[in-house]
Length: 74
Image 1 (spheres, rainbow, N blue to C red):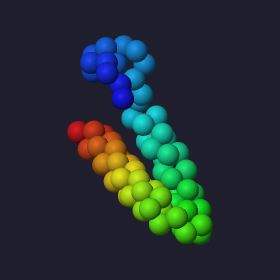
Image 2 (cartoon, rainbow, N blue to C red; image 1 turned 90 degrees about the vertical axis):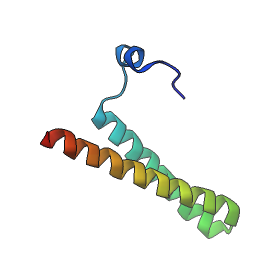
Image 3 (cartoon, rainbow, N blue to C red; image 1 turned 45 degrees about the vertical axis):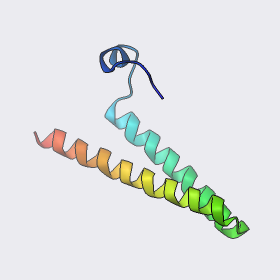
């Protein structure tokens, strides 16, 4: 986790909105692949962990995209 204050983080190359979206999309793609593999293998506990990670990343992506639309509309 980044422990830098917001102002300091901005001066140290904080990610842009587009970079954040791209990062979440990449993480989501990996998590979806892992979830599919774990489902086939039959590791229920790890599958559920991965499934909920996918759900969380999808929610995060939706939130980022909504924020971008609101910012552009303002």
